[in-house]
Image (cartoon, rainbow, N blue to C red; front, top):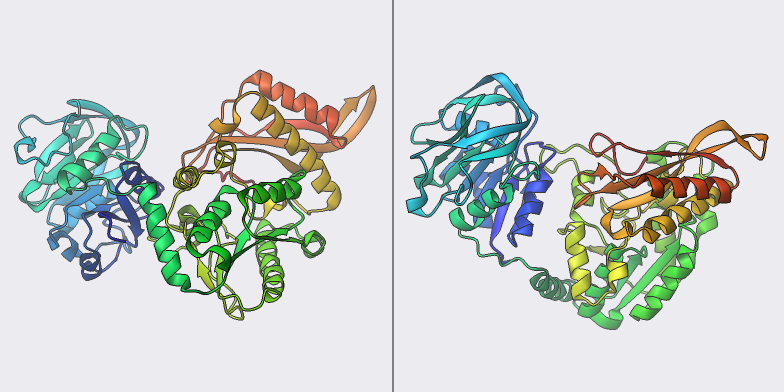
Length: 518
């Protein structure tokens, strides 16, 4: 890939992925790398710039992550954010100390007069007001910048809220420009990417489609590909790109795992008929449910579903004859959440389509979307001509309703949840909220409570409603749905779903919660 690239070194901030996401919004390609990537490896990648993310550690902590000091001598512009700023200062001879007053949350930053290097055409604060409201998250601060650095901004609790050594292309901020709470944050990142690094915005979804098609054609080189279709946007877009690249060398396979939503399998089959993708349908629902019987632990559920899928897929692929490649709709957030070797990020949960294939499988992986975020996949879908209704389809987890039933997955519980979930989807769409939400769904809790229906005592299940807003699934806030909408959902579920007598609404955000309950 020959795009201008800005590398983001991950020091463990919960916002690292947002930095990469914001750069891509600016049409600048970005990748997240481990914090200790050798300077020579970075040089070989020839990045237009490098950003050092924030992180939870103090630079003085034993075992605190460090970057290769030679990074600052490569000639590529570097922007340090929060911990990244402190690390830059510490490495280059400045002084970092515990802040007399820690800053977590909103803070006001004032740009210093006379320190702006506008005349040199590399001002990260170009067209930014003198005073801006920012999002801070730090316990340490830069007490003294390294030699040659100018102080560009201050705050009440930080004498150095931003600094730069313009001649060396080194910049640093004690706040987070990538977070929406920071005023003009995207402009600051744009100034760094375009004004300092010289990027021109050559990363577009149209260019991605052309490059991905050529890359797959070269990788497959006449071999046969089988694509695992889930019915969602990700795997569908992956299949369309691969079909574009290799034509009839592709066979798509849809496996009914028994934990799909109401009438989902039949709807998926109709959709792919319209898309004219070659499809093999496998009903393995009984096998999946047999293996899930008695299982309560959510991580075991995920692993059982992933392993069973591979077993079914392997058996069905064998019927096709020689198949060389397996295609999946893996996305960048899947990789980040599942692989703890990316920087300091911790393993959050297993994803069924991340982590490679069993050694016994000869097939090699084809993952055309592995470097994309969700909304980028949607843009690609539009480029490929998918209907808008399908493009905005909310994400659905690979383990399906199994991770929305807390406790054992049984046919009876599945039937309850399917009906409740259908009510949620129906009312959310009717009220015009569906496309505004990242996800909205029902969860069946292993809790029964007393109720009254028709003057009779009931002792039935509780359903939780989950609705969140998000840009890419990495962080999410609970949706402030209208009370009238929630009232209709609750009333319909209690009246239409026999076995449920109580409905609650989940008002937790990610973090600290995850979007799915398991």
